[in-house]
Amino acid sequence: MPTVADQFVEVLVEAGVRRIYGIVGDSLNPIVDAVRRTDGIEWVHVRHEESAAFAAAAEAQLTGGLAACAGSCGPGNLHLINGLFDAHRSGAPVLALASQIPSAQIGTGFFQETHPERMFNECSHLCEVLSQPEQMPRLLRSALQTAAGSRGVSVLVLPGDVAQRTAVNPVRQGTVHCQPPTVVPPESQLRELARALNSAERVMLFCGAGTRHAHDEVMRLAETVKSPVGHALRGKEWIQYDNPYDVGMSGLLGYGACHEAMHRADLVVLLGTDFPYDDFLPQANTVQVDIEPAHLARRTVLDVAVQGDVAETIRAVLPHLDTKTDRSFLDQMLREHADTLERVVDAYTRDVDKRVPIHPEYVTDVLDDLADEDAVFTVDTGMCNVWSARYVTPNGRRRMLGSFIHGSMANALPHAIGAQLADGDRQVVAMSGDGGLSMLLGELLTLRTRQLPVKVVLFNNSSLGMVKLEMLVDGMPDFGTDHDPVDFAALVSALGMYSVRVRRPEEVRVALRDALSHPGPAVVDVVTDPNALSIPPHITGSQVKGFALAVSRTVLAGGVGKMVRLARSNLRNIPKP
Image: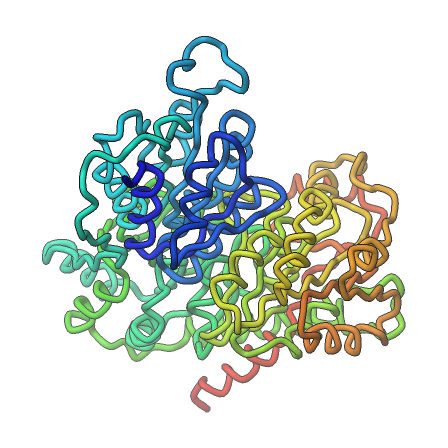
């Protein structure tokens, strides 16, 4: 007779789950054994449960389907929580199985006892205890549908003894709907949006991750209203390529004329973005289009709030718009964007072939040249975010995954594991900082064990660069941010993996090219300049004062790689007088 564990795994396979990331443990044993006996699903052993959740999040974001992770009772499932917060805030449909101590012992202070149904509430749409065989398969299907439909995490708590009991109800065939809905705004909201766009003289579009399937529509809207187009970090990969209206990015990692365009416009249109840094928003003359009603007006006061899918909303409103003829605002912003980028581009090109330690932005620029056109980049939080945002060129096929909302360290390597398992033929590059890599260093063993061809490009500056920058901005001398240099290439070599250590800029291109062509996992340990920091495109007087008080190092104003060429090429769109 099938057990609850058998039924659990059968339903996962039926829902399209192909692997469970985790570490085996006594309360999980029935589930792991059911996986062993079931075709179409595998157990992926990682070295830390936090990595299991990160890997599942990356797989879900890359495929758009459900992914799963699991932790044994007590400390096992407790380790999942950071990765689950990242998955949930990133909108990744992930099912987490938190196995539990024997059901008769719950509430007695038993060995390893915790209460996962309490702990995981904040990082999930659904968190329930599966305490009886009679709850299966309905409760599991409900959890899967909630994760898929609401784009986030569902957690099921399952005592090990319950997992071993005989299943009561038949599985029956069922489906889980994973396709996000398409929402068209009501006519009244479309009329308000059209009126605002028609009456504004200077419109600026600011795009986030919600523009994923709306690139062509955003370009048509920009041409109709003659608008510069900026983006948040999560909107970069979807909106910057093939964009003759591009004025860069706003926020802490921003560059170009995006901030200026937003603050000079008399109407800012937020498209599919829950941009969290309200200090960068004008806090006036703003309309917002978002499929999530909770996102509307929570960052800024709105003149018009529109609930709808970005692409569908633009298609619906375009017939009601007047085509503007005055390009003066757009053209001015395009010129300022190109000029701004050219003023700072020397920060990474000047004598770069002679600079030791190596400039990290130079490393990313070369990596951008050599990586595949459909490569997946996973990016550690911190300065790696800056370098990827400014030097990795999107093209509509590349993907960039990071802990962009939760902001966790150490995400790049476990994200890369999930991304590579999701698509074994695709090039996956982890841009790791030495601080992040050292936190989950054991996952290099996961690469070796499964021979995953992930390429880890390690920005090894023996420093927590972003924390150092935060201290300098606040007028504090950096303290506690630097640590002893580590030869990670030697560590990787001791693990029996391909590695190379790079100390001079003339070695960078060859080292990256050789690693990217290596058939298995590879680590390029690049010794980079710990003083290469980057400031936002707009800083306050108090922040400037902080730098004046504290900084005695080189602070780069933000080189931008190939984007300066894109900006200059966009000037060709400005009509000749």
